[in-house]
Length: 112
Ligand code: FES
Image (tube, rainbow, N blue to C red):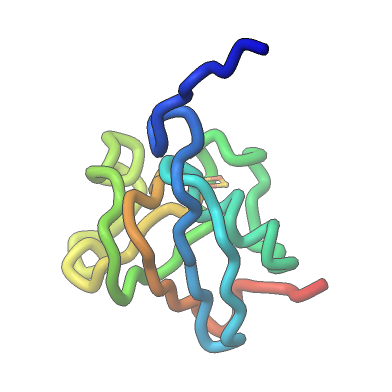
C-alpha cells in the first residue's frame, strides 16, 4: 500500500466564514472566493447584469471587517470616492482572504 502525504493546507485550503448582514447568514468558502460567489452560496441574489465581470457596478457591498483582495482597477473606476472611503466593494471583484463580515445595502439583495 502506498500512502501519499498531501500537505495541509496547500492542497485543501481551510474554509473561512463570510457573514452577510443584515440577514445574518454565514457561509464557509475557500480563500480566494469572490463575495459574489459567497453570497450566491448563502442564497443571496445580488444584482449583477454583467454576470460577475466587474463591468456593471451593481453588486456593491460594504465590507465591515476582514481581509480581502486589493481594490481592482474596475472598482476604482466604478465606485465613488465616498464609497471607497466607506469600504464599498464590488462583490464580483473582491476576494476573501480571511473571515469577513459584509453589509448588503438594503435595496440590493433578494433572498432565496
Ligand atoms: S456583477 Fe457587475 S460589477 Fe459586479
